[in-house]
Image (cartoon, rainbow, N blue to C red):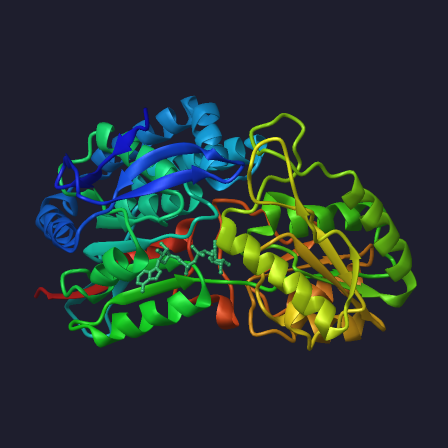
Amino acid sequence: MTEHFKNLIAGEWVDSASVTKNINPSDTNDVVGEFARASKAQAEEAIAAAKAAFPAWSRTTPQERYEILKKASDEILARKDELGKLISREEGKTLPEGIGEATRAGQIFAFFAGEALRLTGETVPSVRPGVGVDVTREAVGVVGMITPWNFPIAIPAWKIAPAFTHGNTIVFKPADLVPGSAWALVDILHRAGLPKGVLNLVMGRGSDVGQIILDHKDVNAITFTGSVNTGRKVAAAAVASTPMKKVQLEMGGKNPLVVLDDADLKTAVECAVNGAFFSTGQRCTASSRLIVTEGIHDAFVKALTERMQGLVVDNALKAGTHIGPVVDQSQLDQDLSYVDIGKSEGATLHWGGELLNRKTPGFYMQPALFTNVANTMRVAREEIFGPVGVVIRAKNYDDALVISNDTEFGLSAGICTSSLKYATHFKRNSEAGMVMVNLPTAGVDYHVPFGGRKGSSYGPREQGAYAKEFYTTVKTAYTFAD
Ligand code: NAD
């Protein structure tokens, strides 16, 4: 019997008429559950509940916030294997990747529990005699959260945890493809003791539930992670509403990994395999452009191809699987269409790129590697968001740097080199928000800022102590005393 899950509005689990069927991409016969789709009226009730809960929640003590966030962290970490399995089952990343993501969510809640005890302000000497100045941070209000499908628990965690640390209330709309992990996280937080209305879950489609959050006057801020196209709509709606909303957008990438002649070949191949193909290439920080200098090009392509031939693509929950399925049919169609686009543009499909059949019916694809790619081709410019790597030949370091920055995105960039000179120059001159030396472009720490430049990000950074820039508003208070 299929399990049925409801939305959380004003502290109550509420049902609705229509549902999303959550399908396991590794086995399309497996239904993870049925998830209620919030109606327009329910989304509005959720916003009203968050608004009503704000005055009391924003005045809770750091101790109260710490205790709830810490309790949630403890439960997530205690249940990381079970939650990891749920993530793998609904999203298709491998079980170790799923458990890693659940662990990350628990660590994020522990970090932001601690942050609640480290809230500070400033007392500043005035330029005028007898005047005192206090600079403090206050909660923004009701925060709308709209998240993508590729990190079903970690992205909600790194938005929800800092929002609560700083005293905001939340209306959360997870991606329609992966509501299971979001539901489990909200259930944990609800039972951790949040007062009613502080966290509201409204599942459903972006174009209906999401749009209501974007347009509603009582939502004070929107944090969004997803594609550039949707991000533009979010930003436009945020400034069109009265009053205007604070907005934070984390979007796509076309992240370069530069491999120089002096790189350690094994390190470079591991960085490329991890960055381009793990998590089925479905990461905003994926190394989707491999920019390789002349002297190492052929050896790198050969070693990478051999490594790719050993990768097991299969059911995400099966032991020994390196790469799970693509998330759904439409993403699979998109990935395969880019394989055709690359071929028609004149790139060489060096290896992979075919549809695969496995024991369980799912969206399986052999990772693809293109060579002879020009940085002007669509496969080098557009975010594919699948297991498709492209190799671009560069004359030397200077040429590689120019190619790596020649993109409309700027999320993450990596370089494999044994030269301190080139590593240092790349860290200074890469036009990306995050730079990796001898590390994959994907994979970050949770206690430092995350985000990009150019078309990849808009607004303040997420994660670490920097998260407060979005989740608080600054107040400057002057007092005169004789
Ligand atoms: P998407 O833009 O299709 O959807 C993201 C979210 O927006 C979903 O919850 C969706 O329902 C909602 N949405 C869609 N239309 C909406 C509307 N009109 N109003 C309000 N909400 C709406 O993205 P996706 O396919 O879920 O995720 C993949 C994208 O996310 C990729 O581009 C990837 O690079 C990006 N991503 C970025 C980061 C980052 O931190 N930079 C992290 C993960 C994923």
